[in-house]
Amino acid sequence: MTYLTNNRKVLLTLLREALFGSAPDSFPTDGVQWAEVMEEAKEQAVLALVFEVLARRRTALPKETVLQAQLLSINIQNANRHLHQELVRLHKLLSSEGLDYVVVKGAVAGSNYPQPLLRCPGDIDFYCPPQHYLQALELIASAWHATYEGHPKGHHQAFVHNGTHYELHNRIGQLYQKRKNRQWQQLTDNSPRATVSIDGHDIATLSPTLHVFYLFLHLYNHLLIAGVGLKQVCDVAMMLHGNKAQIDRDELCRLLSDFGLEKAFRALGSILTAHLGLPSDEFPYALTPIDQRYGAYLLEAIFRHGSFGFHHRRYHKVSLAHTMESLMIQARHVFRFAPLSYSYTLHWALHAVRSKLCRTMK
Image (cartoon, rainbow, N blue to C red; front, side):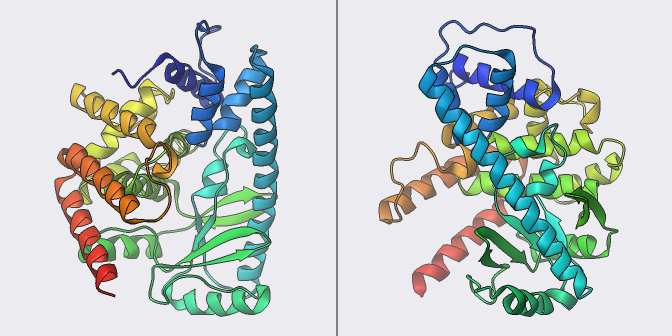
């Protein structure tokens, strides 16, 4: 595991302490390149979490590294406060018209963290069921003067309000077999909603069991497309930990089996328990050496390209070279992880090929 350098081991140790408080009283810091550790934490979208632990430990860091990390950490916390305010505004707007909605990921996942403001923020992703979807589009356009970006028949419409990027989805998640997609959508539409308190308001979301499955589905899809970061892995860990009493383990295992994702989830479990500190009894499977081997492959892929696969690439601008590099990354991930989900990966690959052919022919 040459990819698991000393710097990365230190990063994982710090992250483990940030999430679960489980870390040694001290750990070797000789030879640690702190600027590289913090840069990698930034690439993995976990910088504020890691920096808080270092500050609490009073770890001696280069002055420039401290100043940069402190500024980014403050910006992350302020961005989260703004995101929470926007989420409350969205809740009030949709609720005022009696529209059903579900917020996923983001601040809802962040509510499970010991310090939610330290989770690196992103977009606000929310879903409205078919009977309310068009009403929600019209209401937001009218009340917030929103301009939508995206194809009218796409799976979501994006817009910006008060500097926050929103995505209104007409389905939760993406599966690549029509039958499986219908099965999942029926399940999410017909299952009881849960709520999460954000700034004193009850924000509607998926039940913890469905949310764990969805977070993993989102993570795995992005892994195949380009890559994921430790942030997305932490979200799954904290959803499992923060809702351990509410999660129906049998239902979760059944979902993962039905959709062909059990082996892939078990591989992720190896990272959650061995590297991030999730108690083994909070993960719904007993792990095997095969799970641990593929967990190591998964962790290597995570460190290779960082959050959503944006980092350590040769070509960053949209171009033929960028497209070819992306195809090489996808091919590598498909062949590496296909044994974890043969049917799912095959249908994902067929969907990707069809999508690229359609774009090429336009």
